Length: 101
Image 1 (cartoon, rainbow, N blue to C red):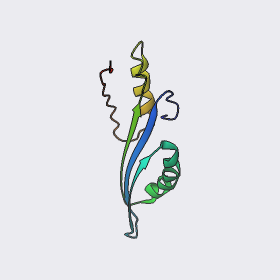
Image 2 (cartoon, rainbow, N blue to C red):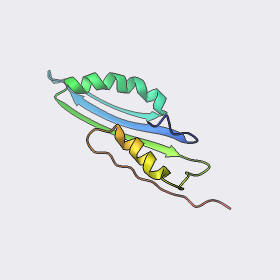
Image 3 (tube, one colour):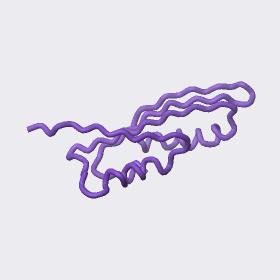
Image 4 (tube, rainbow, N blue to C red):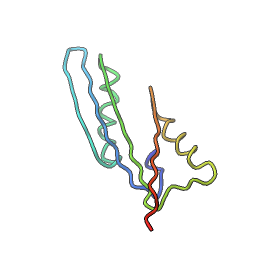
């Protein structure tokens, strides 16, 4: 999903917590490129399925140094791609900066 977004810098911030059926707990934070987060995702998926309690916050930041194309349906297509893989609640927020002259 994020990796298919071309022409942009991408980062991800993960905050994950879970408690096992036997009472063990894990809490972790990660900041970095999405490719570095893939092993964490692979680890957390089965742990979350087996856990009694879980919490996950995942924030992707995508920055277009040359600007994001607003023509046509590009914003809607990006929003659809970003929310398609979310379970639970997903929120897409955009911020714009004025072009420096």
